[in-house]
Image (tube, rainbow over all chains, first blue to last red; front, side, top):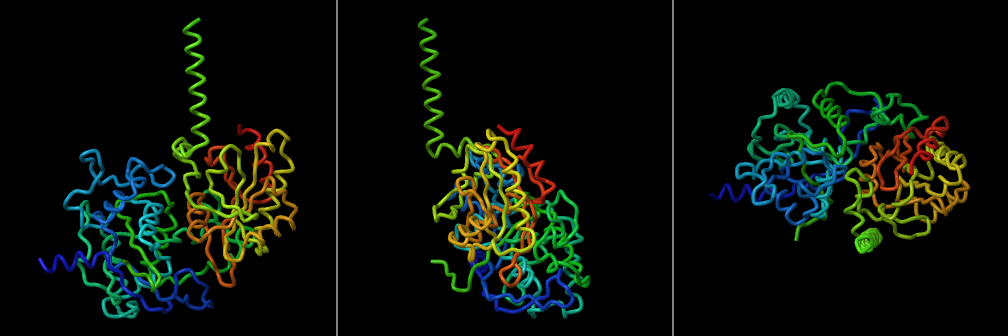
Amino acid sequence: MFITTLWLSLAGQMQPIDAGEYRPLYLKADTPYVQVQSFQLDAAPVTNQAYFEFVQAQTKWQKQNVPSIFAEHNYLQHWLLQNGQYQPSQHQLNTPVTNVSWFAAQAYCQAQGKVLPTVDQWEYVALASEHQANGSIEGDFHQKILAWYSKPTPTQLPEIMQNPANYWGVYDMHGLVWEWTLDFNSALVNGESRNDASLDAKLFCGAGAASSADPKDYAAFMRFGFRSSLQAHFTSSNLGFRCAAATNYSKD
Amino acid sequence: MKIMKLLNRSTWYASLMIVMGSLSAGVLAQLPDSSVYHLESTWTDQNSQPLKWQNLQGKNQVVSLIYTHCLHTCPTIVSTMHQAQQKLSAKTLANTEFVLVSLTPDSDTPQVLNEFAKKHGLDTTKWRLLTGDDESVRQLAMVLQFKYQNIPDNEVSHSNIVTVLNRQGEIALQTLGEPKRVGEIVNILEKLE
């Protein structure tokens, strides 16, 4: 009982993340590491229960009220209509909310004075193993992550925080769901998905900043590929989110 | 005769309702599902006046995202939109407006945007130059599927897209902001109501 209560109270908690640097995937060999300022990150992905509380407070985000430009038809499709309201079932309460669009995720974070983490923030925290801020120096780190990527998404998602936290005290960065990031659409592989993929100064200001790659971290490649396939109104049964905030953020 | 009168009266009431509806917040409820004007963010124009996207209903809008100190693509985008404006028929021009949204809102203050408009000879009765907060810019970019990334020295690498929105804020056309696309932009604007 105690453990359950502790675990539920941890679910909405944030963990402080120290400033540091990391090497993003798409970077020229001679450009420096990206500096990440200190910030806070939700200890776990947002659950169905937390998201349900949100849509009860902000009814415009209820399934029947959201315009298609903000979320496609499958938005919250795993919730059932009960007593005139779409809601998660009992066994979905502590599982990560999925089938939410970027707009919905952003609105949820905004409602709490938080924001979605940037790609840099997310990747920086995702780099940590259980014991080290930079897990990639552990031999089997990438292998473990890839092992999850190769498994199909289960019909019933596991509950959050079932596996050990990483170095920062953050759970489920890998192994549960994919997650939205604030600027997932910033990678300029294609200027715009319906056009050709040339990256030159005619099409982009500063195009040179986004080329070349380090192929070692194949898992990051997969995330990169997945992100660039997304559009902000998309929803998917294995795509959820968590929120970030500045270091001085505190919930009152 | 009586029926006609009744009918006239109900028609009159119906149109009154429509007029009242479009003057009130009820407008939002009537927006098409796919309208960009569902965005609720508030922006500031070059005259420091606040503006919401739904205020732009009623005219077709030619929209792009730029920043004023950008040297490569942005001048071409602006010039493409400007050329399109000059090629429109008088009737279409009366129903068309132009919007530039800043990708570097911190440095593109209303004053800077105003200067930019003057420097490029943009008629500010037709052109709006908007600045907002970072989250609003990101949200707008998401709706328009416009990609950008802040890079050092307050520069931004970004897509080069011009979007045409119809009177209700639905995307009528997206094309590259380069001179050879001017005809495409003019054509769609001439076709739109």
